[in-house]
Length: 189
Image 1 (cartoon, one colour):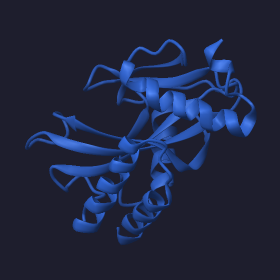
Image 2 (cartoon, helix red, strand yellow):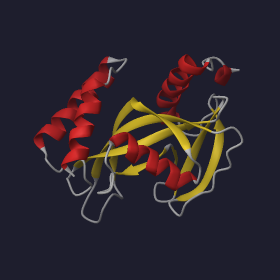
Image 3 (cartoon, helix red, strand yellow):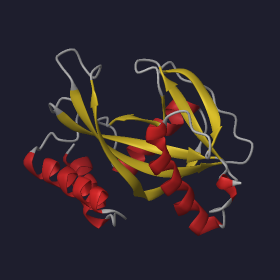
Image 4 (tube, one colour):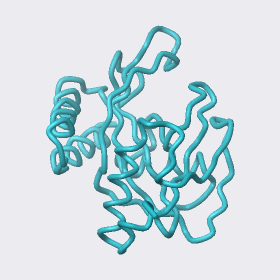
């Protein structure tokens, strides 16, 4: 467990957020981990880390989203860290593979951070997820299969998202992948 916490702190400290808000979240997440030895685990209340992945299609024009069974809203793939996870990026990749049934190539540098309340996280009360978001690219022609955590899994055009809260992380993911693969402008066409 300590290795994952140390990895998360290191990953977050090395991150170079693009905005002041993202820098403030990074600092908050690091402080949380510094102050709470169990801060990466869902047993830490009310705040704990989660890891998620914005999965883009091979051409960067679509994003794979899950209609979350409990929240009944469309989100990127992700979830809680588990004892077998050795790295934060590994946890994000594991969640993406488990929830989609497809293998993904994950960028190990976080693309976005988000803090949000989750009223259905555990039996005792509302929790706050400190979500570290990564980006991954699916293989061309990948065919996802929904897990039991999803009501549905679907490829959405990056310019036509069903949840406005996804606009910033998806745009940052497209820009990151586009800068590396020449896809930056394809999603807005």
